[in-house]
Length: 163
Image (cartoon, rainbow, N blue to C red; front, side):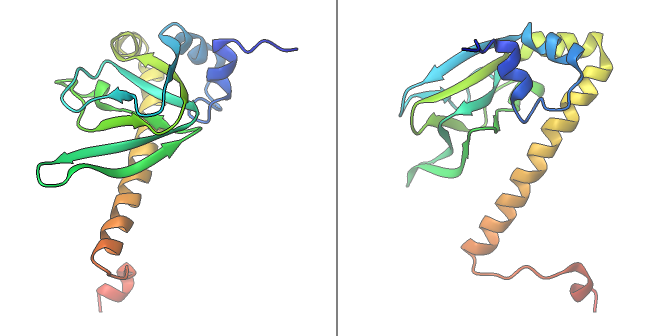
């Protein structure tokens, strides 16, 4: 039976795939294995954004709170995905709630630790930023499609709009 180490779990996560081994080793120094029970909050809007999470198992809802409606799920993420990028941007506060929908296991990466390592090694910072920006772009595209669906609109190719 093979024992899964934190390094192995991190290296196999889609976020870290293809990352140079020396960078995986640096990330492991900032990583811990965590779990959340169904209904448990991973983080809350306005709280200190001092970590981000690589989901290994389970699902989480990203939520916003609206006074007249309560919590509204804006996206559901699952195994192989990343949650939380607010650790990158001052004032390092969460802008969403993230709540486990079922037993969820993740690798938590300490934001302050990573910021320090990225300041010391800009190539590491660049590699992480490329990966995080890719996630941001995917989430923005998903939000765009949700808005089009909400307003029952059809996307139109750019070349059709310029006529």
